[in-house]
View (tube, rainbow, N blue to C red):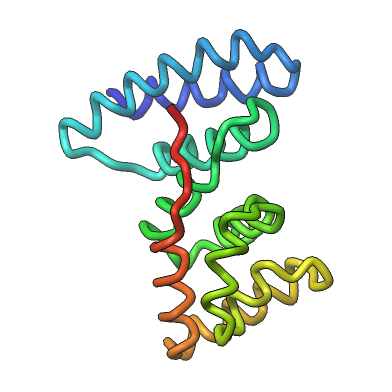
Length: 156
């Protein structure tokens, strides 16, 4: 039951986003957060909740000027095979001076290097991510550790 209510609110919030009715988006997201927190306390998880966290991260970065990279990092930890999370995190981090400073200490990782390389496009970055992930390589594992250890703010 919680999941179906949540899906309806998610669709409603996307409609409000399209109409740029940000007060209504905010109100709907607060309702979604209450359902999300209630379901998490019950030990439930679903694709719907991951979609919600993804949208929340994107909206925080693009509309509300709140941090979204911390949520995106959480999503990557939960599902490192989902490419969209990698490119979204990359777009959030590419201008992040603090994350770049942490990267400077991790210079020998080719995936992390492309993560911050403005000259390369997302397709080049994803090609390397997929290749290293498929091989379960040392650079892939180092990249995962690097992402998991980044000190990223979470939304309030």
